[in-house]
Length: 190
Ligand code: 5GP
Image (cartoon, rainbow, N blue to C red; front, top):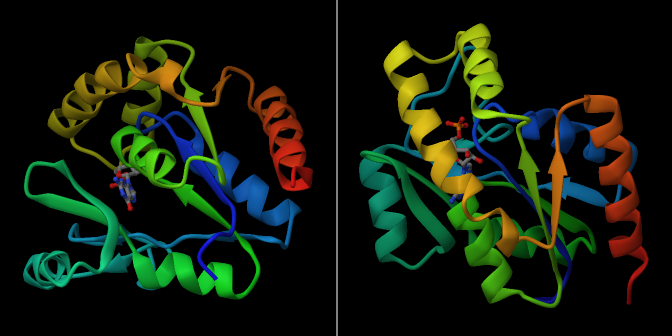
């Protein structure tokens, strides 16, 4: 089966995208998280095969060579992220809807490959300064990495109009309600 549905949530890092993805997955058992592969090292609490498939850089590059990815990207210098074909097809074979938590380039790439069966949603932070505060409070990245993520965020926000929907994540409860409505409509759509 190669024509199931896909829901893509893309956003600058720190926009609350992961919280919204978890909310969706808890609400609806038809939705299954598409676990990306990455060459970055796991953070504390991250589990291999649950949060990501953590691969050595050489293994990631080998998988690129074997054309195992639907899309992949060097999201940060020297750090690769991508969606394995096997991951998406497994979800569709189980007659589920794949939920992607991927960056803007990756999200738009998926939308262009699976235009009709993909719902693409851009999660927008209320402002770049609020985003920076959130990233600093999260303490998972060094100050330098926060600066890198902020400069990437501006470029990502410039692409927001290419998505089917934009949700501004100012108040998380309101964002969840908006998301539920958009997703429910998409699931019901033939
Ligand atoms: P993080 O290191 O914070 O987990 O993720 C960094 C960025 O990579 C996030 O914007 C995340 O959405 C994105 N990302 C995660 N998986 C993929 C993927 O499979 N493909 C692409 N293009 N980006 C991904």
